[in-house]
Image (cartoon, rainbow, N blue to C red):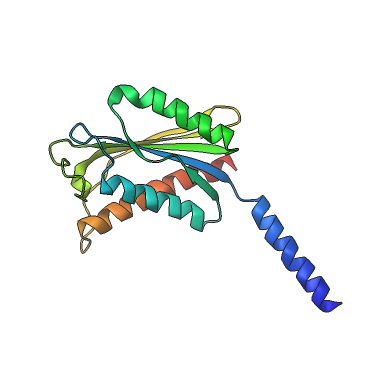
Length: 170
């Protein structure tokens, strides 16, 4: 009897943990006048943000990161949001990375100085209401960090800010 009770309790805990997981859909958009393909840095930021939420137990999906022209934002947002709704996500998060064209023409380059600023929106999928529209600018890499570590740290800071918004909504 003791084993059955223990197994039942464990199964219940696992089910409850699954019920509390948020379903998040992400889309990362790169704005860089000198690149028409998604850079390694954009993909690195996307990976860190997605991993952050996945490792917290959230159900995470994403549209592939894409490089768009400034006038392509609305269409890109609309398509990705529609896919998030079709997929049953509770929240849609879009990150828009704006690069300094003069310093970021190499798609393999990874440096905080490549980024001018980042904006992100968090939208409740069911209502379509934007619950956050934020903007950030990276500083310099911390002392002792190389550029790659600085970019990873900045991506984690973005994820922390998104997490804070989602926690306030819960």
